[in-house]
Image 1 (cartoon, rainbow, N blue to C red):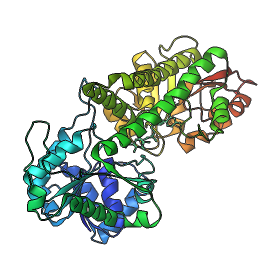
Image 2 (image 1 turned 90 degrees about the vertical axis):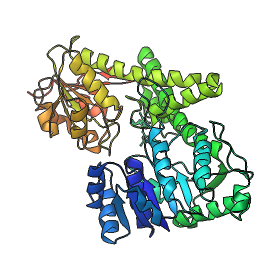
Image 3 (image 1 turned 30 degrees about the vertical axis):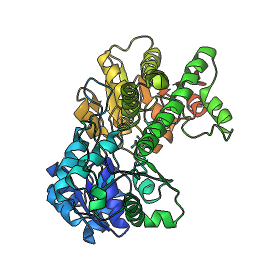
Image 4 (image 1 turned 180 degrees about the vertical axis):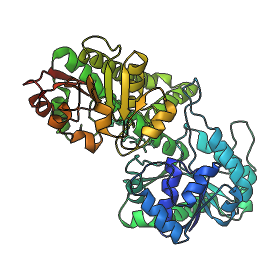
Length: 473
Ligand code: UGA
């Protein structure tokens, strides 16, 4: 298939490279010249495992190109919309301007029979609006809503081996649609094109099946539904994941009050198949470019639909999540003997999760910034995210290595559970710091081993472990 991918951020860059690796001819379009140039030279503009190799092989094979010129989409028959939908400034709702701009820019280049595939995360109702826009300008092109479920850090794997494919297809009776502004779509347009509405649906489905032939042949479930359900599948999946994390973090608060251990609690309840152990890691909570803004946009959309009561619990999910960051600052203050003023705090981890350089709404960066603003002298490091963090919050000291970050520290914080921090040797570390105080923001360290090596170990949702022996001088 000849494919265009509009928007080359996390989603579009990975999607374009993966589609090319499946044998399709792909052009990625983005308005950002630097990004297009980097991608054209097989240099990913962000850290994502396996992406550099894919870009290298696929651009060299000539199947993958990038351009700032939207007219390059004219050669493609399937067009993926993969632009961002960030949170609006000072509001909970999603900013859809990039999606609408992308569609407006694309429609002049659509040809009869083309398929437009929406992948961006949007509020329910958006697909129907976009379909009306496309329908007015190119009645014989069809929109499918096909949300993505990729996780940063595993984005290539999730794109090539998805755990499900969701197709939101147009209604059978798409003749006579109208958009929200009340513009009636041209009656009889599908008939004029010589295709029945069902024919359009079937055609759209089989085109998308051809794109995803590889995954489907490997047994990936494909669920076909209407636009609204497809849009809701995406946001409700993210709302569920956020709720699961905040549930265990709420238990963490109760564990702190009762002197119990949330990690053991997670393991114990997680053995029940109905609950499951995944996404029950208590700690600093969720961040990133998706979960926080998606639950807020979902609440805003439910308000507009008059269904606000249904999602009031998400407000609590958001609050629990934010309270963990404040608790982490308090634990650090305790570890510093009651005051942060002038204390040297070493922060290990800045990305919102391991295997990513993304610091958007990162709990780790948020905590590091709060500590600095409250008078501590913070030195932070991360295997991949230091540059992005320094751009967002230049006031911190940034170190290249763990050794540099922890030098003479009064307290060490682990805020993102990179493997290299999980496997730190507490005995080695105790020789680098001023005081052997550690706060584990992700419940990822072996508290007993740290305690045995002379550290006082604190964590979210677990009792404090005082040092077993004095740390070696
Ligand atoms: C999330 C979803 O997991 C994807 O399915 C979805 O496609 C994506 O958003 C999206 O909407 O594009 P992602 O943002 O990459 O993916 O991150 P997650 O792996 O979901 O982690 C989100 C946050 O939750 C991280 O800050 C992580 O540290 C935190 N988390 C995760 C916990 O605090 N505890 C857990 O048990 C799991």
